[in-house]
Image (tube, rainbow, N blue to C red; front, top):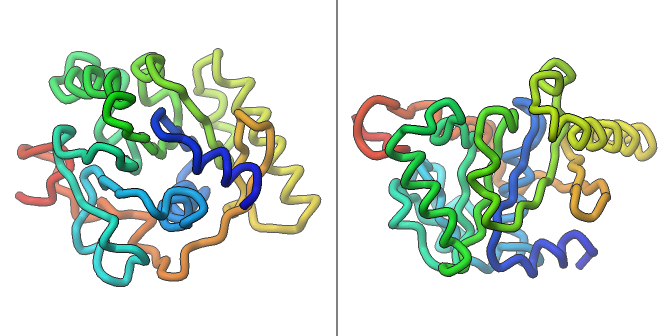
Length: 221
C-alpha cells in the first residue's frame, strides 16, 4: 500500500472532492477507489441517484454497492458517492429544498462515519462553504484552461498548481493525462488504473435520468 492509498484508507469521514473537466477521468478514479480493497473496497457504498442496472453483478464487490435516492437512506459507515454533483447541488439554488436538507445532513456525516465522495466539473458550481464543517480533501483531475478562468479566485491558484503538476507528471512518465490526479493534501500526483469491468456507461451514468419530479436522482418518470 502506497502513501496515498494509506492516507485515503484511513479516512473515516469527511468530504473528498474530485474536480475536473468532462472526460478527465474523475469517475474512473472514483470507481478504482471504491473497489480497491487497499482504499475503500471493503466499505459499504451508498451510490446517490445511481441507476441500479449499473450496479449489476459485473461490478467487483457488487454486494457492497447500493443505489440510494434520499439522504436519509445513506448507510452509516459508508462511502456516499455523488457523480456530477452539480446535478444535485447548484450554488445558485441555495434556497432549494434539497440544498437546505443537504446542508443540514453534511454537518452530521461525521456522526454517521460517512465519507462523501463527489465529482464535479467546476468548483464554481457548488458552494464549498457548505462542507466547511468537515475535512475537505481535493483530488484534482485535469481542468481545461477556460474552465479554470471561471473558478473562484480563492481556488484558482490551487487548481492551477494541480494542472501544472499533472502536465509535468504526464510529460515525465509518458502516461495518459486521464490516469493522473493531484492529491492536494499530500502535494503528490497519483496514477490510477481503470477497473477491469469499466465501460463507457460508467462515465455517463445519468444518461436516462428524468430530472422533473420525484426524489432527487430517481430514474422513475
